[in-house]
Image 1 (cartoon, one colour):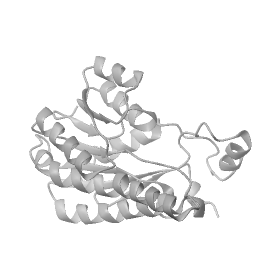
Image 2 (image 1 turned 90 degrees about the vertical axis):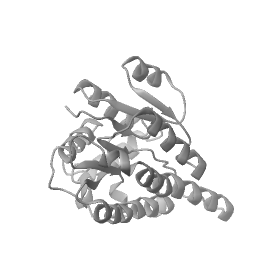
Image 3 (image 1 turned 135 degrees about the vertical axis):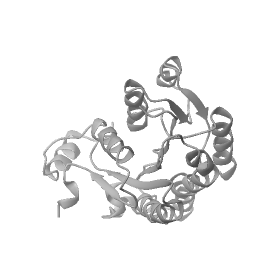
Image 4 (image 1 turned 180 degrees about the vertical axis):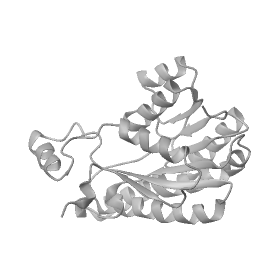
Length: 239
């Protein structure tokens, strides 16, 4: 397995938690960022994970996370930017503006700050090239009008990823994974779920494991950078 740790942001729940657990299962070292303490965080800690708590909603918070990571390890094999916020766009202008600032901070500014601050740790990795993987969304390419603020910042992250891919080559590869219907939200009614499933050519909810397999595929291939890999059961094909 990889000799240096992998940093995962937003590792306290859902996809981020699954990625951390599966990397541990396969023998990797993990540095797990989280915002809110949960029983799952305690489980990760019991498995030997290095934990970093912090709020990526502010410049100071993101820089504090970077500092904590540098204090925990001199090298990184990869950074997986999984931390995300997902809500429909607000109608009231002031609420929408606050929401937009939050999406921008979490989806774009925090990745930029962490990549910039932690690039020396990636360059110091014992195996090269190292990796940065941004978890975006199929909505980055085909936006949903009800989530336009969210979608636009995920699209911005993909554009930012292309810049980093050019800037950091050849020592660091930079790619995106675009999840589709991976894990239904608790708020999804049976009707909503059925409608989503009807738009998936492969016909089922993906679960988090396909994201892990996509991550491993990117980490283990030294000739892919600047790519955005859809993991959506073909939903991006739906019209």
